[in-house]
Length: 86
Image (cartoon, rainbow, N blue to C red):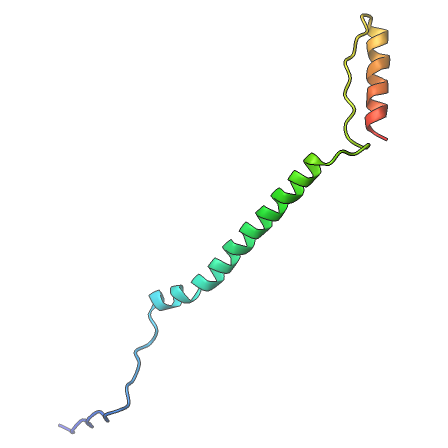
């Protein structure tokens, strides 16, 4: 039988990367994506809080409809809708 060459000291051959090692390399991208989503949610929450606390003339105008007859109710609701859609 032919003799097999002896391995040379000082040089090591790495085995091919396992699927587990490949999954670990994508963990950085996943962490970045999760961080980006958290930052976007915090920004959206801050914007929502700002808009909720600022007083603006364009806000919704609510008032009680006090008419007793259908014609009066329709007129008051029409006015209410017009006031809030300008």
